[in-house]
Length: 314
Image 1 (cartoon, rainbow, N blue to C red):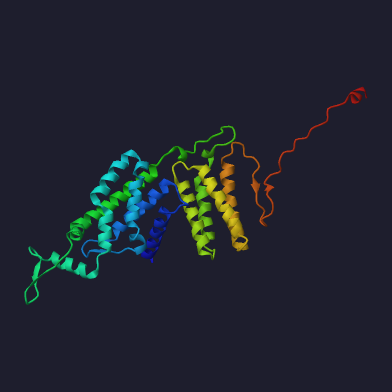
Image 2: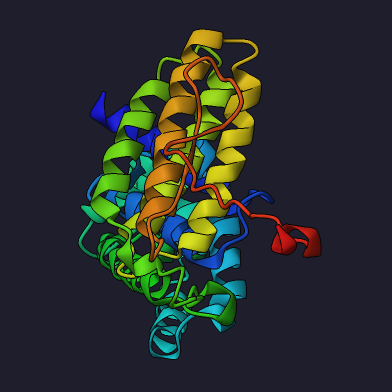
């Protein structure tokens, strides 16, 4: 079961990498990192096998192309190492060759490994040659495959570093309004706890498509909160999208949707309240999904009419 779960996660990473709905470079770099690590771990040099689902292998060359295309976006200190590794390993060529290897050719190559000097063997009547394309044989030498396993693991680590250190102007979240708003007061631990609760509630949803989409968004929120400096504006934006989706889901699954909405509402309250300099009045949903009401009674400001001339005479 653990093996199947891991494969499903990597298949999702492949889908995310090429999804038009997930455009952030760091997330995609992290997906590519996990894909490379997974593929490397499934190479078996001794038996010339690659134990990985076709959904991953069929798109592996496209993954490599995406990484090559994204190199200009990567931190300079990691860029040169990635280029060097990809050029020297040629992972797309090796993996495609290994995946396309049929059983008969595999057996021939394994048998040929045992021959010390010659590729000619006798069949009792004469000699025949074990013919294997030079390119395929060169890519699939045991030493070459061992090198590929190590290389893909290194490439994975560098891509993860590039994802963690990615920085651009749009990634900044340095907005502060000292007298009123300071997100540094938000406690990520509280938000993480609520996100875990939210994930458990989403698991109950019967609609797999909706559940997968919501879990993906929760993954992104958890990754954001786990950053050394979470970008709360981005977090808030994704939370609002989550809120809109769940509000619509509630029309189909009222009881489940109501509980999920309640948890999202709690997340919003934590983020808003903890970022306030002066803890003001925070709207809170009623359990029956009624209109927003104030958590505390707001202060009322009254104005007395200015006295008229006749009032002064009296």
